[in-house]
Length: 510
Ligand code: NAI
Image (cartoon, rainbow, N blue to C red; front, side):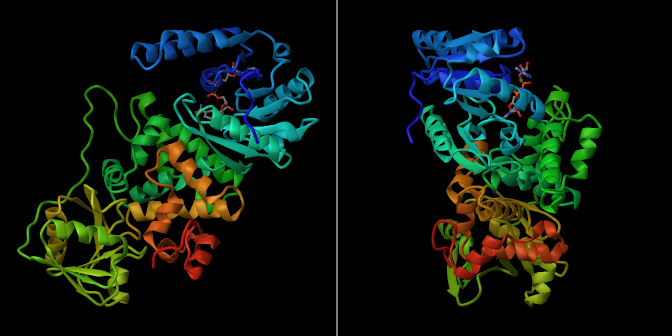
């Protein structure tokens, strides 16, 4: 299906943060854009904002003046809804209220021709419910941009129950022609991003609640081992604790209280205290001028005379760590076994979702040190470890010495199942897998959405594939057994893939 040609007039209803950004995107792509708002002042402000933003790019030498002027000239103020009659596509970005949006769409249906495409930028309302009040619900589609719209690449194209598939494809192609990365999703709470991202915040809040570490430590682990651009605490401070808490609460309610999405009391207390993040000067961190960023907790330094790293069997993703050890001059000795590393007195293993104490008892592993997941063990600058109740401190010191001599800062957390990065990734992949299982989106679109919408280092499903056959499923099974909570129930799709020895995109490595 072809994109709308640039002769098609676009109308944007609502000239706030999102509407003016969307108008800018469409105008930059060459369309004439009507910008309407119930407040004429908002339209003026929106157009002035677009001009200012483009001028900034001209000043930096990224855009020539004539192009910027032409884009601004293509954004036309509209003082009445009836002025939008000639638009081929109307994108609504007004207040997030079902009845008000339905009323505006009903008016637009009467004003515009039968062939007009109506799109909503809603982030939390059902496109199906919005369409139910229309004469032609098949002409309504979700076009969910991310803030700021001119910068963020992702557009979720949302199909309500009645949405015409060809029309959705045309909107997908149009978003691509506008330089965006569109994905399809069916109209379900949170669509892709606002659903699949919930565990990124939830697991760290839970870990903090259970004493794994403070925000600075958990943020550092997710950045430096997980390669996420920001940790969950600094990110929610930026988003606003109230906004993030409201999204979680609305997704939790929309899924009828599914414990996967249960909001956090820690975050609630921040909201109750008015500690909303950067905008209020205090969230998990303080933002006044004098405030110093707390440091991540890092263990003391140790050294060892041990020169050999023994690798027993296939270490899976830990092979990156083995390669790093070889590059650092350690002798690698390979033996049969089940993927353990031995260094001095320490037995190191990748976390499988069980506590170190449980695993050392049930597997008969003495002096066990569990290692967290890293996005890339060859480059990680920080890693979490956890040890069992019976692990000899001398063995822990050997494990620390190994990792530290590879240039890795180590954070020892208490013995919690799944550690930090593994647990986060497993739960992100779990939610992505359920979205695929339930037909909300394809695996490729889930991953693209998480990368283009939130800058994740890799899509959670491709990352899960990279860990190998059944690894994420096993972590979740163990988390569920550890907590006896429905929150950690593994997606049926992960379970099926584990038994079929396959991944989302390829045969998983065994
Ligand atoms: P905003 O508050 O900045 O702007 C909303 C604008 O709509 C205001 O200028 C208001 O005067 C106007 N408006 C309200 N009712 C109207 C009506 N009946 N007719 C015409 N104009 C009306 O809001 P924002 O942040 O731009 O959000 C707009 C929509 O985009 C909402 O549905 C929101 O959920 C969605 N969204 C917001 C994102 C964000 O990060 N802010 C991200 C993605 C979607």
